[in-house]
Length: 303
Length: 330
Image (cartoon, rainbow over all chains, first blue to last red; front, top):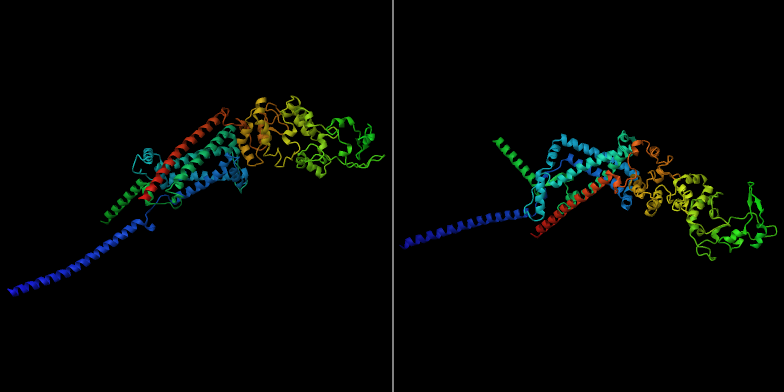
């Protein structure tokens, strides 16, 4: 019996020995695993706190062609405003200063005519662009006002007033941008139309270095009354357009807290994923859907 | 005075000038006694005559200098005036300094022994007299002026509010027309015309339209003028200078038969279309027709659009500021 007991004891001792050894191994293994998991978590939290800029996803919003059109439009418009609006306030000292910079009324007039020609060319180029360029045609149809714009406006106002909790989802162009676009369209038609009436009535174009060019047929058709009407409309529409650009376009593109000092999209053409989700959520969803479909197609082809 | 009058009281006292004409040297003592200078002696003014002998005095007597007494803080009590300083800047004084023998000095206009104070004549008579005085030298302009609507009103209709020469050109500080500080300079003349033609008192009294000044200021010609463009038309470019006439007068520059030619002075392409419709347009008056309604339409469209846009901008701004605060606090 005594021998049997001894053997049993030895067996028990051996089992415990092996068990403790195994346990040690398991413990260290689990510790390693936990360590790794902990590391991963730390890294993850760091990433969410400081997203690396290089890795941020960007979308192309405006292509080079469109960006150049915008720059040409803004340069001509600013020059036209500088040489035009002061004429409405001849007694103001700032007006006097600005017009004197262009060499007085005759200089300002010639600069105004030169950039007017530029604006006409930008307008004509844009017309060609929306007819012939695929991207232009697409954008033009996207920019046409739709019923959704009116419901968007009402929902946005509700959101501003706190009646609506979730953000309004906009497509490629929100009603804010559509208003900007069509305001320019209307402005160009008005300003170029009335401007040409006055210009042809005066009948002269003196581009800075090329001497006088006489413009034909102006005085045959245009009467003093028609000229006066055109002048009134040109002057009134100019002030309206300038005020809209300053209040609406500058606020939405530059001065509001999300964009200040300005949105870079007009220069780089790129928009970040964050801004995309913020301002053009529907367009983002569409792009993502397309990408997924493309992926699926690829996978199917590979199969 | 008595000593001088021994000779100068003689009515046939005269001296032959170099060119053969005679200068009468007779002095009527009554004229001096009725002038403001009745208390002065001859040598107070003719100060360069010192020695008087039985044979008379020196021959090269200088012109009298009024500024001997008429300056500020003078001790003899002559009326103090700044006029002589204004005269020093005038075109007349410039000519005097150049040595032009016909250039006027004080006594050319004011008279010498027969000088009279301004108050001794009524405004109307003074205006007539002054204009005639200018006409002595500026005869062509005087005849042109007297046939104009202003001259006719002054000399024929005896209207005292009408401008004589000095009302536009100034009195002592008459400048050359090319001098930018002249009241009739290209870019200032509209203000000079406007001083009467925008005055409600005058325009109401004579039934002239008061809007001509303001409508010129808002026209392109007026705006360019205010920015200093010298080639832009001013009042005188279309209405004439000294020959301003009513538009009903066939010889007027703005008579319907002549107006195209008047525009054509600057706009060689001018044709009948240039004259169709109003020239002086007041967009704030219903007389302007379609322009009145267009201007009002745009005014209200601008106001309404800007109010709506401002509301949207302000709501958006409030919302975005709130959103920023929420993000920063969480």
